[in-house]
Length: 155
Image 1 (tube, rainbow, N blue to C red):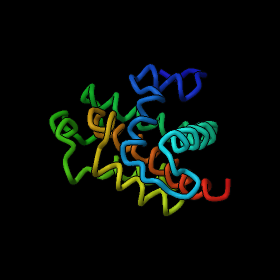
Image 2 (image 1 turned 90 degrees about the vertical axis):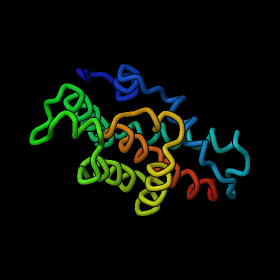
Image 3 (image 1 turned 180 degrees about the vertical axis):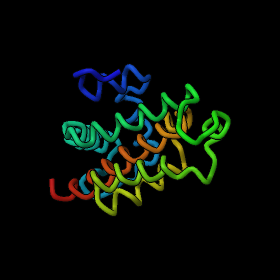
């Protein structure tokens, strides 16, 4: 799946395009100083996303989510039945922890708050991703959005 590829390529192979990530992020866009228009928000979000995706630590967290998703689809997650994975049971919080970790890593505590917004609303591609990847991508969007809103004021 990964073998020396950039995380963007790995995401695309998993059926997740950067455009879909940006589109999902902009579904919950709120005008803010520095990102007063949707066009400006898209530009700043993409810039912040580029910065985030250049970090190898973040790439590995995203990759971990992809691997967990694949193993879940195959019914090979330890101590979990396939039916439990497919239903995204409420007692399963590892996916939420990964999403929050990604959001906080990128955008600090503000990233976690934005992660929660996206995780609850599930805009765009988040509504069709599996139990791990919806949280991974919500964490990515949440962290990047937090940085977008914070840094746009100063940019």
